[in-house]
Amino acid sequence: MADWSRIQQLWTYRFHKYTHIIGKFWSAAIKYEQLRRLKQKLGSRQLVVIILSEQMGDIIACEPVAREVRRLHPDDHIIWMVRKPYAELVSHHPDLDGFLIEKCPGERVRLLRSGIFDKVYNMHISHRKCKYCLEDPINPISDGIGLNFDNYYDRGDLLYMFSQAAGLPAITADPKMYIPKSVQEKVQSLNLLPGPIVIHCQSSHIMRDWPAANWTKLVKWLLATYPYPIIEIGLTPTVTEEHPQFRNLCGQLSLLETAEVIRQARLFIGIDSGPAHMANAMETEGIILLGKLFDFVDYLPYSGRFKRGEGVTILNDYGHPCAELPYSWVQDAVQERLGQPKFV
Image 1 (cartoon, rainbow, N blue to C red):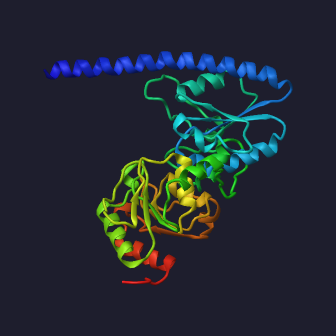
Image 2 (tube, helix red, strand yellow):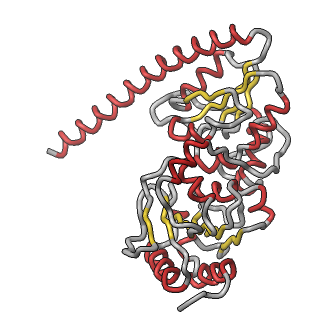
Image 3 (cartoon, one colour):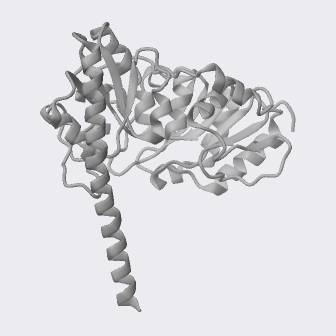
């Protein structure tokens, strides 16, 4: 029975692998043809691509790259290559003419090798491969400045590093997000209580997280101490509190809807993740919980006002993971941001 299970797993993996590879070749061919036709329509205008296909926080942090590339190419056609789950982060940017969905890094390699783009600003570090494809993505510019996955957080914030990986001067601008009216209206229809405290408790990596028991304790204290509503955002809920002032919106919002909820908050409290970058871009006051991440101890992913220490409290018990961050530190930071409790 165990042997049959292993055989089944092997053939399931092979099925997914080969269907993915076939789909990659087909997808790359279709996109190449679409881009070729686009170039014919552009005439003398260049086709410029910005590449940073994931993750959420990286794309938000590196938004100023689009503005810089538009400054360098005022009349050219600029698109952003991005994975489908993150496309809405760039779809409304006023300095972009469009975006291109990336199926996987292997497809990206094939499109770059085709020479279809006149100018490439690739922010990816080398060797982040697709799990199915043989192609190994290489970025000679990031290699040339010695930027790799072992040292990138030691070199500066995400925007500072990745802009250089793209061959641009190190950029230090404040990131922005662009929320269309339709998204604002959708969030308005949720009838949220005004001036909430927004919390985000889980990231894509467990090493960034703070214990669920601490979040529950914090929410109970906030509800008992301050008159403000609390909203939890993210993919899956951490806090299971039954209270008229507490609302769970986990898994119910798009990325831009999440950003709009954060924009309306009086305070954002969260771990190092995409929503923390949203708070930075939306000019919302924040308390950010950091900790040791692999071998990175003293690091700060944020540019702009969070890097300048404006409107933010960064908590990091250096040398310890976020899970070991003392609860009292977070509570003290909240009191510093919100003032003394209004009632007990």
